[in-house]
Image 1 (cartoon, one colour):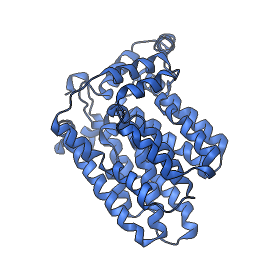
Image 2: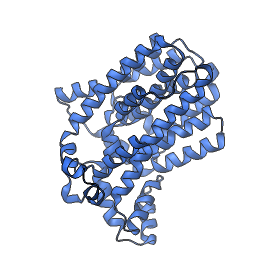
Image 3: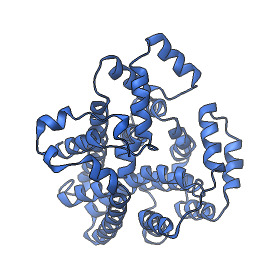
Length: 358
């Protein structure tokens, strides 16, 4: 819990770049402070947002005159606590067959390294939805509480509509889990790593998305960005762990019955479809991180021989962590000043405004 609170304060103090999602939330919050409930409801209707939970929370904080940074504090704390608790719960269930410890300090450290810090500290809403989504998966597949699982899935989508992307993957895993050929499914999905963007555009064209998200998808697909060599190298280093995931499933994994592994593979196959659009792919792989980490933890719980894979994954997540810190270095230097960090009064009264954005 203390680790979660620490990340809560990091989210509370984080100063975003002006182009970040978090900067938009600050500006939207100032707008929400000035409007009535009727105008807020009109805003939801006009913007055609099927995911209204985060905006509703912002509006409630704005009308209560509570600094929006406390909302970020609560969400960041909840996200980290939720991920750690999920991993621990998965281990706890498998402890029936093994008498070893649950989450060790080393496992907690790897989990911390696995976090996407740009998403956690700046994206906020996607990670918030993720922290609900993993429990939807837990109750649907592990705990077998279908009602609670479906309810949490609805809450997830009402928090971030992009998670509706996983609905077909959930349906396939739920109804056909005994017939799944994991290696074949993953191998076929790897084709999308070499296909151009227009293939994804054609796939999305068959889907009826809300206008807001249809426009956003078009913007991602039509945004031709030239990446520098440094950017390509950093992206490769940041995603090196997922190439290890491919190798693990195709060549190392021998367990064809583990349900969590089946969920991981089907979800990975769907996420691979978005590979040609990095901004979408890099968001969805955050879901895979939590699932892959849980799978590796379970394997280590059952066999010491599997520990080497945890070490490999730990190194790759550490590289991901270093890249994230490097990318966010200016935001980190602006946000976390040691003199203020040690003063609890300055810490909790710190207020960020749009003038502070980088």
